[in-house]
Length: 319
Image 1 (tube, rainbow, N blue to C red):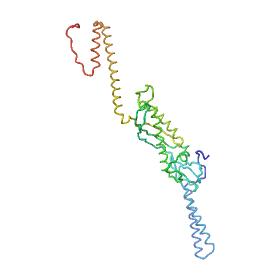
Image 2: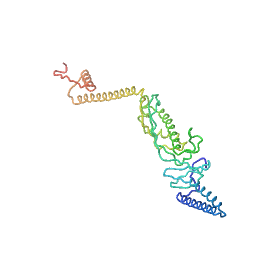
Image 3: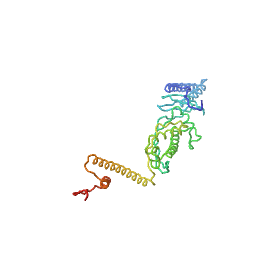
Image 4: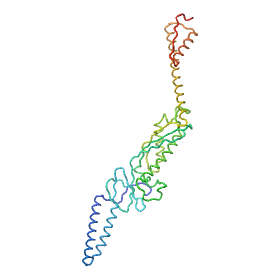
């Protein structure tokens, strides 16, 4: 049972009831001390006993005051009795437990982590900058791992680690593992489709699939700490500054080539349509030389960057 998380089943009491009983006990102890002191002042027998008993009783009541704890929603307490794990306390409210029981507070609320952009090499070897944002939380059934499986050099060997320090340890652990997972996933894919197959996943074009892969990798890495990644998304993606200008020119060249291909494809289809319409309607019969001249003129007009200035032929076609 000590090797995994389980619910605390030890003795517990409602905090308000326990507080009332402790105050009553303190009042009885004070009354015993006063009663014994009065007998001592009066020179009567049996005066020391009530004073001693009342003092010990008040001391016990004060020790019992250390057993109170308050739990809010999505919080838990890991119960440890002189180094032995006794379970995890989940019930919200005001409670009193054994004052010698150490109750380590832990939050199971969701938290954000923004990983600053880091420089990595993609699958093709290009340096890129990539950043990550994720939402993580401690699994309700794996609190034991979060408390006892993860440590930090600054807190090694310490028994009284505060709740904020423990969460900082976990957040630092998540940050380091997120950095490693991001480098692992980014190195498996290319930035874009240049230099890879068209059907291959890329960081820029297949963000949803990459995010799913990243989330799966993070969950595998953080499982040992009892941490669950609710969502992981790449929030920054760009070429590294040293090659950004070169890659921008390459992208511009690719865009110009794609646009030219579209223009030529459209021009060829328009020329073919014009020749077919002329032939179907019997408007004019053109020999091969005249067809070649017409095609050349139309291609120049349709594919040129500047507006064409037509020359009107007022003579015959043979002129």
